[in-house]
Length: 526
Image 1 (cartoon, rainbow, N blue to C red):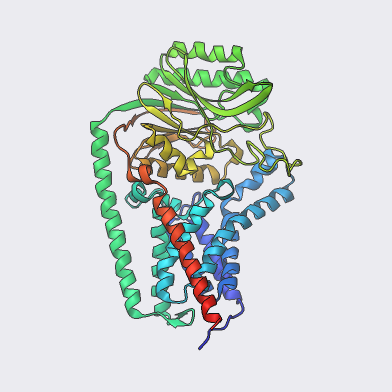
Image 2: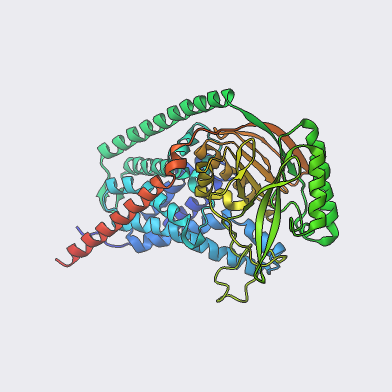
């Protein structure tokens, strides 16, 4: 009997809404990580019995709820620092959430419209999900914030598979579990999938498969943690001090506070140097002037560094003049104990509308939120700073949410990852916690320690196994010092072949969709 499309019922809309809320609940600040293991179950119940179009609508509803509640903090950022009215800030948030929801809508549409059998839906659900996440990571410059796997950042044994498959491997596992739970529950409730009965054998095989995958994953995690700990205990380490100046965003670029800001960082660094660090790290744009270009302020920093007798990594904007053109960079400078500049890293992945305006020719009425400088230029991907104690892979601000950038640095022999950022834009919201949680995966994926210096927090240290060793409070002036392991002669499978798993899921999704569409059209023409 041919299946007929049913109207969307309010109960299905409720299930989609609940799915979106549970997805958000898995992330900080709520941090209820088990919610991610069942959130997609509710969406699958919602789209059951529907074709692609209604599946798309229900996925879109779930996605809008999820991304609005996950990224709510953007309203305050745009209103306070972009000087936009609240209604416009809210509208922009909704438009961004709507765009991101298209990926979830596509996932639901493909699953409902093209996976007519329970077996194909069970298998393809995690493949479609990871394929969509992969597409979201680079399309229109990419915005891979809040991938479902990030909700498991503090589940230490589980996330060790990230050194094989990256964050996408964890996402795959979580969505596969959702799929198995859905079909088990649907079988118990005597529900059908797209007009077909759910076989008992399929359910039990899938449950056993999930149990086996989880068992292998956790055993692998235990083995890898033990091996990494042994490697770290036998290897070398460096002592790093992180300075969190807690400079309010309105004061950061106000010339009246420039002297006070620099004085605070120098004073806090001097105090931190009593512990004898090898490296002192300042956050993104901690130096509120153009390093090298502003000769007097630059010399003041260099003199101070010489007196402290340790290396410094300083976030500062840079400017270059070439043939009457001015180029601006968001940079990190490495200064040796002698004060000499040993290298400069320029940010590669810039923030749209924050550091540059995309499609500026067609959008002349839109201005950047960072209005103190002109359009920023990009640096060279994979660049590292060659410090005598270790190669430094520096990720500036939200560059740390792009796995390929850190992997390229480690592939180019970075022995230590450093994330410098200024999260003051986000206020006391969930954003700084979400941002920090994503940095955990860069440490695990590449088996490198990660040092994080944030202007207002959260600063901290993460070891190569993904343990959060120490963190600072949010909006607190702080200086913390710790010995961190340096890894030189090891590259993980993810570092070498980082995109392989996610790309395979994307290609498999594309091929499956094309084949199914061709078959459906062929049958309809018979």
